Image 1 (cartoon, rainbow, N blue to C red):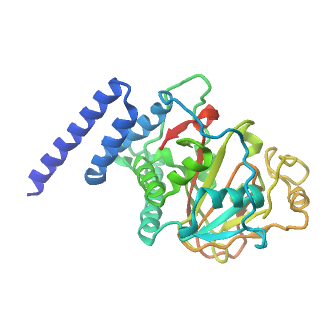
Image 2 (cartoon, rainbow, N blue to C red):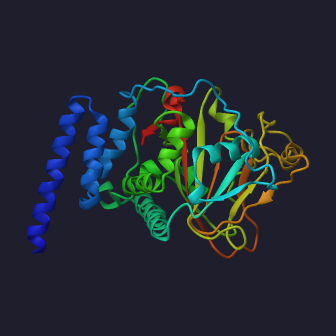
Image 3 (tube, rainbow, N blue to C red):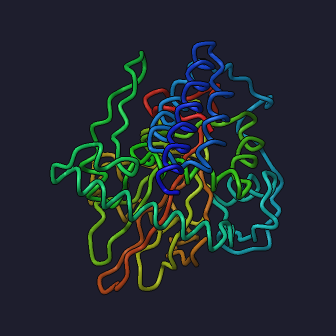
Amino acid sequence: MSFLTDIWRSQAVSRALRRAHALVGQKRYPEAIRILTKANCHLHSSAIEILLVNLRHDSFFHHVATSSLASWPPQPDDLYADQLGIPEIDHQDFTATNVASGVFNHGSIIVRNMLTAEQVSLMRDSVIQTHAHHDKAIAGALETETAPWFVPFTPTPREGTKAIVEREWLRRTGAELAADSPRGLFNLINCLQDAGITDMVTEYLGEQPALSVRKTALRQALKDVNAEVGWHQDGAFLGQGIRTVNVWIALTDCGVDAPSMDMVPRRLTTIVPTGTEGAMFDWSVSELTARDAAGDTPPVRLQFREGDAIIFDEMNLHRTGESLGMTKDRFAVEAWFFAPSCYPLEQLPIMV
C-alpha cells in the first residue's frame, strides 16, 4: 500500500507542477500559486514548496498594483485614548480599523490569542526544523538533504534588487529568512491567511500586500545571548514613501524568563538620530537617545503568551528585550508586509 501511495503522490505532484508551469507560461501567476497551494496542503511536496517561493517572488513583477487609499498616512480616531501605554485587543476584535487606531496613535497594538495552539505548534516546529537544517547545510549537507526546510532563496537579478548577503549576521541574532525555508514559508503564509492577518493587512494598506524576503523571519532568541540588535526604527533604513506594517507573533511565552521585546510605547513621527555615542551600530539608536525619544512614556519590557502578537510599522522604536539570567529561549515569527504600489525593491517582494 505504501508503494502504491508513493506512486500516486509522485504522479499528483507532477500533475500539479505541469499545470502550474503551463499557467506561468501564460503569465497567470496567481492561478498557478493557488493550484500549487491547494495541492500541497495534501501532498507536502518539497518540489512544490520550492517552486512556490520563486513564483510568489516572480509574480510581483507581473502584478498590477493599485491602491484604494487616497492618501497616506491615515489619521484614524484614537479608540484607545483611555488605555495607558500600548493598547491591547483580543483576536475577536482584530480589524484594520482597530489596528490602524493603535499603530497611528500609540505606535503599536497588541493582539492577544492571534494564533491558535495548533498554529503556534506548527510554526514553532517550523522554526526548529529550519534552524536544524540550516545547521546541516553549514556542516556541508547537500540541498537535497536540507530541503524543504532550508533551501537558500536566490532571486533572479533585477534592477532595484540586491543579492542576499546578510545570512551569517541574521543567524547570529537567531533569525532565519522565511524565504530560505520553503516549508516554513508555506506554513507561515497559511497561518497568516487562516488567522485573518492577510485580509486585515490588505484593508490596512489598501491593496493586496507583499512580504519582504529580508525582513520576514523565523526567530529563535537564545537565553543569555546578546542579540547584537540595539534600539532601532526600521524606517531608518527602509527609505521614504513606503507603506508597511509588521506582524510579530510570539510562539512561546516571553518577557519574564525568555527574551521578548523592549518598546517605546508611543507614536513617533520622525526618525530619531542614529549612530550617536553609545549606539551599538551606526544605524541603531543609543540608550540615551531612546529614552529622550520616549519622553514621559518610558520604554517597557513586553510580556506575551504564546500566540500573542504585536503590530507596528517602520516608525516604532524597539529592540530585543533580554536580560542576564533568562532561562528559556524565545520562538517567534515576524512578517513585514508592504504595499506593492510603493514597494522598496531591495526588500525582495513575496506576494501573498
